[in-house]
Amino acid sequence: MKAIIKDKPGPGLVLKDVNKAKKLGPREVLVKIRRASICGTDVHIFKWDEWSQSRINPPLIVGHEMAGEVVEVGDAVTQVKVGDFVSAETHIPCEHCVQCKTGRMHVCKNLEILGVDRSGVFTEYAVIPETVLWKFSPEIPLDFASVMEPFGNAIHTALVTDLTGKKVLITGAGPIGLMAIQVAKASGASLVISSEVDPLRIEMAKNNGADIVINPIEQDLVKSIYTISPDGVDVLLEMSGNKKALEDGLKCLTMGGIASLLGIFGGNIDLNLDSLVIMRGITIYGITGRKMFETWKIADELLKSKKVDLSKVVTHVLPFEQWEKGFELMLNKQCGKVVLNFD
Ligand code: NAD
Ligand code: ZN
Image (cartoon, rainbow, N blue to C red; front, side, top):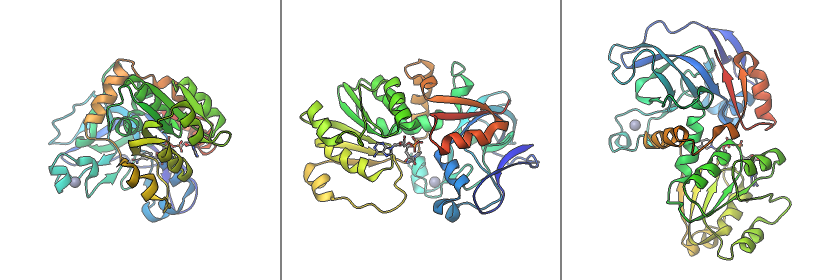
């Protein structure tokens, strides 16, 4: 079978023929991949940045966002059957640490990530533990089903608090920020402001329903926010991984406001916590992944009911063979979400 692989340390990826798994473990499932989407993490691995060098052990099949069909199940599998359509939670919990045992599998101590710590999904058939499979509703188009995983990031980050009647600032309108705009709108936020620096994504933020979009390069974000809302915003969703966006975003929060942080900064950043957070009574949530599986249930419902429309986020569905074009689009940020079609 064909697979997109990091075959050796260094930049780039290759498309190669590899052997299909011969024997499944008792709780493993063989999934015929139908769609897979490219995530920023895959781009990090492609580039072979510092993080990938410290984390990835080639050869490795990359990719983790997927939707596909169950074609074979291990002896002890009970949760899915052949023919089921599934997406996958890509954080694989150990199921026996204290977090897993107490209903917090998303912060499992022994977490393994698909396509990072173990063989991924940019291939024709992937082996995935049954624990992480999500049978998505048949109303959800295949092209969007692989995007349920990053969509879950948007949901998990946005819904740390009730957004009804709240003013929300979302810094960064990459694919996840765009989806968060729609989640905030669907949740009854009274005002959704997006900040973004890239022209294409500024347009996409508007198209995804942001009431106001601010480009912090052209306009001072903090001044603009306090002009729009003299009390600041109630909630900050940080989805850029940019230090200045976080710092200004915190300044935009009303006293006692809430910050939910998803963006990855890739190293130390220095902030004046005394004045930005402590003396202003700000609550900060760190978000990793999705809650298993309450986030998935919400994702499913929002897509099934069409409260969120991912056609405004998925800009490209490419045949799998054009994966290089997909990575190029991602590298240049000339896209929303890029989905690879394996059919
Ligand atoms: P992305 O890189 O496509 O989007 C980030 C966006 O922020 C870009 O459009 C960029 O132009 C914009 N940006 C950069 N500087 C800005 C600034 N100063 N102000 C406003 N916008 C600015 O990433 P994505 O896939 O949408 O993911 C969002 C973030 O979440 C990334 O940092 C990613 O690494 C992180 N992430 C975290 C988790 C987690 O579990 N915590 C999971 C997935 C992704
Ligand atoms: Zn665990």
